[in-house]
Image (cartoon, rainbow, N blue to C red; front, side, top):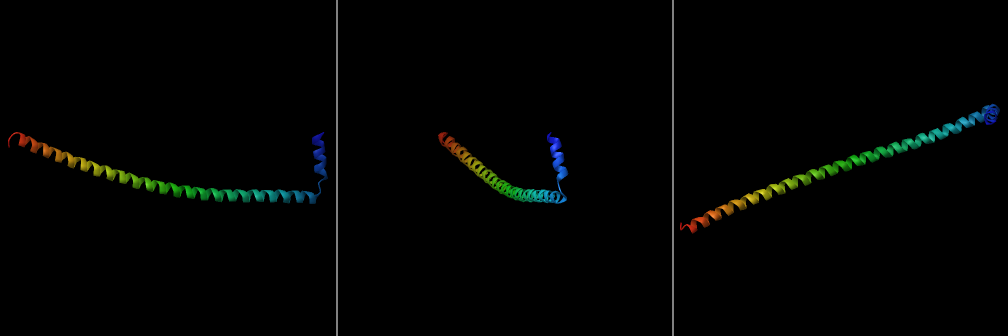
Length: 100
């Protein structure tokens, strides 16, 4: 019976073997914690980098948006200027055609 064998083996463990087993377990746990700490530090660094990258992209996007708005405003002003010029020329043409 496996359970009986395990119980017998556990009963045979000496205090020294229990201590060594506990120390091995503590060392394993310590290494796991150290590994987790390294992962946490690495993740925090990645988050900081991502936040910085996002901030840069948002800034670039804002600059590009303002540039597009400025270009659109300039194009609208030029269109209006050309429209006024066209109306002025048409008025002159109409005046000339009517003999004035």
